[in-house]
Length: 158
Image (cartoon, rainbow, N blue to C red; front, side, top):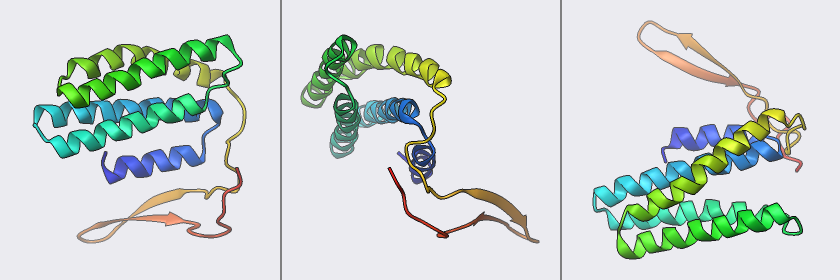
């Protein structure tokens, strides 16, 4: 994942409500899974191990966010455990079919949560997060990006 993507996710996380955080986790998972497929094709073992580890981290976060007293959460837990096992098998077998199996589960779940997040009108989980106002200034030979309100009243309340 590129630094620009990480920065974009960081900004979105700081402004997201609970449901949007789950959608962001799914999106991060999909990015890491696709990165793992690329690393598998490039036969880059170290990069494959790293991207699969980060994908498993996303799945762990999804499992941790479940309220297991609900029946639906129990079903989701079983799906997440399947995805986790498939990622482990991918690392052992070096076979992209395991990643494809996980995508068959995770893509529809991401789409479902995206629909749900459109209906969630609760506020952001983080309060007192930095307000980002970005702009561009043009010089003779360059373009500069600037952001206002850097560091004023920083501190997150979650």
